[in-house]
Amino acid sequence: MAEDGLQEELRAFVREREWAQFHTSENLAKSISIEAAELLECFQWDAEGDESRVRGELADVLTYCFLLADGLGVSPEALIREKLVVTRAKYPVERARGRSAKYDQL
Image (tube, rainbow, N blue to C red; front, side, top):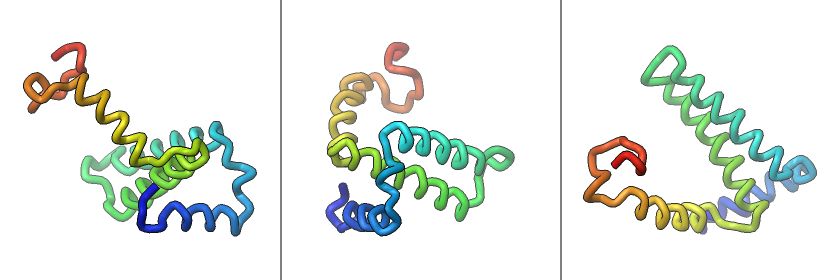
């Protein structure tokens, strides 16, 4: 996780409340989905969304993502970098630049 101590701060937050017992991979994945839906709800009737609500819901999504990564014993940064390698191969700059098409339609 982030080198600024965020990982340990999240661990301490969970430990102080004795919530680790609830943080199975399944429960955290469900929570990510639920919070992502709440983030999407911010844009339901307003394409701009309310920035303070968006920030709060995005923080919830990221928190659960970081907790799930920690539970799996991997850093979010490592996961993202690994995925970037795959995504770069699927979306070469020369074919994907300025396009939103899926990789198999480039």
